[in-house]
Length: 71
Picture (cartoon, rainbow, N blue to C red):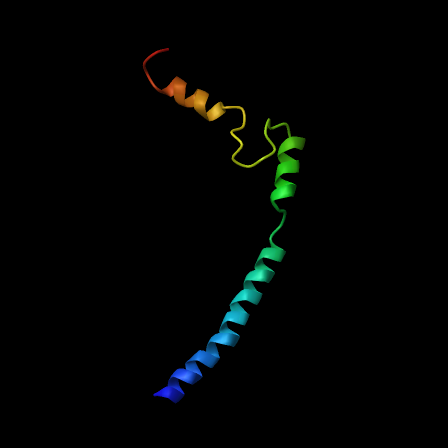
């Protein structure tokens, strides 16, 4: 039983190495990054260059128009 456990624990090392290496290359291959996205947002006229920065409130205005009530 201890030989089986030792063998399984030794297999964890190459398995984790393979997973981490694959993850690294997937992230490196992906185009752009947070800085590039922020620069593109600023360049193309969005009011906030940061993701999740709130923008110009267009969604909030659309929600207010769609909701009947205090108009």
